[in-house]
Structures are given as structure tokens and as C-alpha cells.
Amino acid sequence: MNYRHAYHAGNHADVLKHIVLARVLEHLKKKDKPFRVIDAHAGIGVYDLGGIEAGKTGEWEGGIGKLVEPFAPEIEALIRPYRDVIATLNVGDSIRLYPGSPELALRLMRMEDRMIANELHPEDAITLERHFIRDFRVDVTSMDAETCIKAKLPPPERRGVILIDPPYEVKNEPEKAVRMLAHGLRRFAQGVFLLWYPIKDDDTGASIIDGVRDLGVAATLKVEIRVREAFAAGGLAGSGLIILNTPWTLERDLEAIVPALAERLGLGNWGHGAVEWLVPPK
Ligand SMILES: C[S@@+](CC[C@H](N)C(=O)[O-])C[C@H]1O[C@@H](n2cnc3c(N)ncnc32)[C@H](O)[C@@H]1O
Image 1 (cartoon, rainbow, N blue to C red):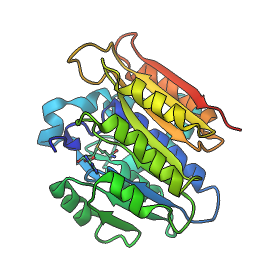
Image 2: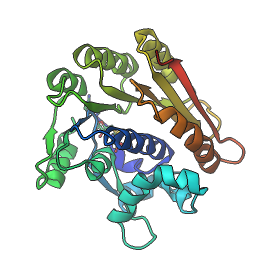
Image 3: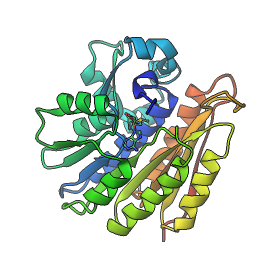
Image 4: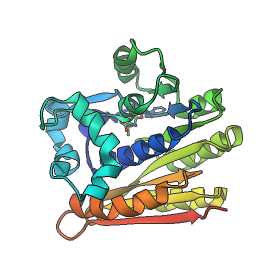
């Protein structure tokens, strides 16, 4: 396992993923009933953007670094929960600490909600465990994400969100990601599943989109932001998220957020966002 998220934390892909995750959590909180977050690829929780790893790539500067100026008030209102978590972690207006998905989720959860934060990398799993040790709402596990999904679904609350966020460093990961969704849906058909995928100069994104569309789950939404041209060996040109069992207000929220975010995150005139049903709601 070579991938370490510390090199990429706060980049344009994290910004999109975390804004969507925060909106999903806000939706789940509209009902009093508790829910569970299952973060199958959790990382280490909080990232130091002033640290060696983040400094080596500087990726955050093309992500959260571009969100310093506020958006229009209606967009700011929608991303407020995400902004508030970042503000809580930092002093003043500068952003040194960036919340990964389990930290963001935990800070948006209520006392009665629960989380399983799973991370396979042994060192990162220890860091994560230490980070969350004082919060009784979190259970940190260290297993393969597919095993985690099979073992931990359905959640006892029968409500929840499952984040599948693989690094895609192994060749079979696109198929595995779709398989995880299929296993997860068999066990927890009503769960909100979020699957992240990269946009690069290859067919990773397309094969995932086709695979998920074939699952035929009503209310499957795709959201993408491209920030630059994709070219061979050029790395990440953008990213996407597929949301299954999409909460009913999310499409409307993302239709507002995504164009503004794409314009802000794109290089030159490259920024382009799209929100599209892969399978429409019933
Ligand atoms: C993209 S990062 C996760 C970022 C995190 N979800 C966030 O948004 O802050 C992917 C993580 O998955 C972990 N990982 C890689 N393969 C895994 C596997 N098979 N099962 C569980 N975790 C895995 C990596 O060590 C890495 O920390």
C-alpha cells in the first residue's frame, strides 16, 4: 500500500467529496432518528496542510486554498456546515488543519449518531484510532473495505451513509468498488452510498459509472468536477461522486453548488461541473 492521503488532503477532489458528504449528513439530521456513518476508507482524520507531505505536492492550494473568498450567499448557506468544521479546527482565517471524511462526519454528527471509521493501512489506522480514542461514538476498525462493508451492514439504526473512497492504486479497484456497492446494497438497500472516482486519462471513471448504472438503483446521482485537461501521466484532472439512494433535496443543492465550485477550482477556463441522474428517482 503506497497511497497516503496526507499528500492529497484538501485538494479539489476532497473539497467536492466533503461538501457532498456534509450535505448528506445535514439531510440525515432532518429526522430525529439516529444514523450511522460507515467510512470504509477513512484515512487519518485530520491533516496538517503545513506538514511535509502536504507541502511536497501543494495540492491543497488548488482545492481548499481556492475557497478563501466567499461564494454568493446562497452557496455559502449550503456549504456552511463544511466551512464551520474547518473554522472550528483552525485559528482565525488561515487554514492549517483540514478535516478528512471521518473528522468532518464526527463533527457534524449528533450525540446519538455512530460511526465506523475503517482504514487498512496499519500506521494510518493507529493514527486514526489514537485520534478518536476519546469519542465513544466512533469505532475504528482496520480491515479491507470490502470485508468491512460485509461485516458492518446493515447498521442497527437502519439509517446511514456509507463512504467508499478507494485510492485506485490497484488495477482491480474499479470492479471492486462496484462490487462493494452491490454487497452493501444487498445488506442495506435503503442506505445512502457515496462512491468516489477519479477523472484521469483512462477508463476508470467510465467503467465505474457503467457498473453502477447497471446496478439499477433508483435515485442514483452522479456529480463531477473537471479542473483541467486529462492527459497521459497527467494525474487527476477532476473527480466524481456517485450517490445511491440520493436524499431528495441533494440534487437541487448540488445543482447550485457544483457550477460555482467548478468555476472556482478550474484552471483557466477548464472548470466544468455536471450533476446528472444515472438512474432517476422512482
Ligand atoms: C482517498 S484515501 C481516504 C480519504 C478519506 N476518505 C477522506 O476523505 O479524508 C483512501 C484511504 O483508503 C486506504 N485504503 C487503501 N486500500 C484500502 C482497503 N482495501 N481497505 C480499506 N482502506 C484502504 C488508504 O490507506 C487511504 O488512507
